[in-house]
Amino acid sequence: MVDPWSPLLMSRRSARDLVFLARRAHPALPDHPVRRRPARRGSGPGPRVPDGAPHRTNDLVPVALARSACAGSMAGGMIRLPPQPPMSLRRRHCSAIISESEPPAGGTKYGKSSGGNVTLHVERGIVYDATGKLLDVYRRANAESDPVMLLWHGSGPDERTVLEPLARATAELGVVVFVPDWRSDAPDGGRAHLLASIAFLRARAQAFCGDPHRVLLAGWSRGAQAASGIAVDVSAADGWRPSAVACLATGYGRPTPTSARVPLEAVVNGDLDPIPFWLMHGVNDELVDVEHSREFAGVLRDHAWPVHLHELETNHAGIVMTQYDPNLRRCIPAAGGHAIKAGQRVAAILARAARGIMS
Image (cartoon, rainbow, N blue to C red; front, side, top):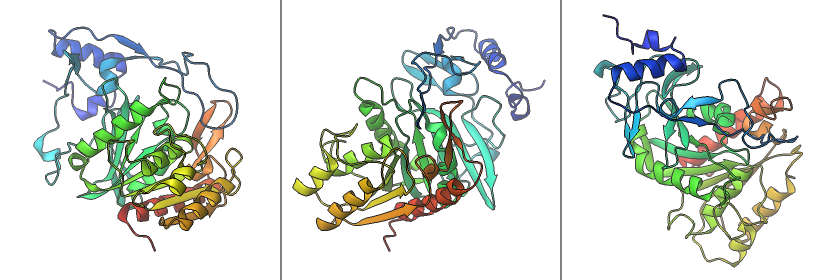
């Protein structure tokens, strides 16, 4: 009898097929509610999509499929994990489980891809908090206690996929990259989501073959502002601070989503132990002027904080290897040009920062 959950068949399953098979395999499980995904608002310039408007035809997604690619359930607040791959497909030097099959259309928790001479494992749609927020993890197939980067996207709600090009490029250089969804339009500005992603990384970094003692906290645009708040406010994350912070294309003169403190003022008035800052900004940024990063770099130097400022020939979207699509009202992977060149350089800088190379 053919296994309905075999990688070959799974790659051809639609979402409805998976729900049907899940209920046949586990008839005792309750039906899963259907959750409408909120519309995504673009991170770049242009009009925003109203909250709640469908952004694609597959707007209704079963909760179970948002958490795994096969039969899973939420019963009594507990997640029932999907069947594990055979032992022959498990990595033996760390506890993460990886399938060697390609993900079916619509995304799965497990996937594999090759870029150049590096094979990446990409694990998608991992629940990291009690509200069901998801994150993706990118790492080399041979990762073993690699440095870790937590990468926060910009103000567009739940746009972790926007950062996939940069996440892949950085992971290929030997960094385990965690990219979570979060919502800047939440009542608390997204603070709970961001802090929950930190807690998940601290608890689970080793399970994904990362080193929890070498953590680079990075962000783009609004996410970069949030990252700077963690660095300058020791109380923001219950005393935890990363090994270094990388901020892409943001300003530092306002309170952040993670802290009520203003980074510029906190560096001047605070007595914190300095941690390295890596600032990257496009000289052609049409949304956030590069002068913001230049000013903050000067303040950091004046107060003996280690800082590297990198100015790149690109714009706001290009610094993360993307371009803004006015029709989709969001950023998409760049087709070429300055964004690819700048994004590759940013990935190399992030990898150096994650490894603690300051020179």
